[in-house]
Image (cartoon, rainbow, N blue to C red):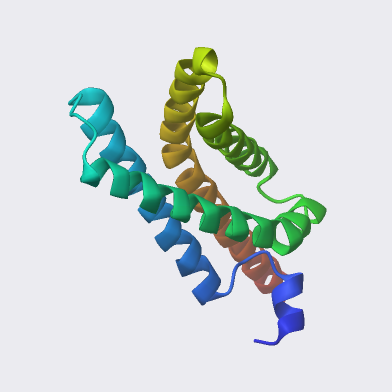
Length: 157
């Protein structure tokens, strides 16, 4: 696949797609593990909790870089072709809120920290469900479009 082909297609090249999936999975696992360990079990902060937050923060930084790489091609081309807009806009909104609340966890005032923490948890939980749904909707639409094109071609004969 040439570089030009990658710029005109919505579908990500395999290594880019799998990198997005792997880093997103790492982000979700570390976030849920920390939530379970610290919020639900109410364990005292330990080296494990510190390590989870460090890995989660690094994964979040990588996700933001990957998110930026998606904006310049995947999002732009999909928007121009009017494909998967509803779940795409929702994905953009979720990523934006998670980015802002993630920063807020470090920089928000003490008084607003609990609200920011809860927002980050709830939106993160929602994103864990809805971002994979965005991928599935896109795949379904692509298959429908391919099937429609094949049927159209066959019927013209």
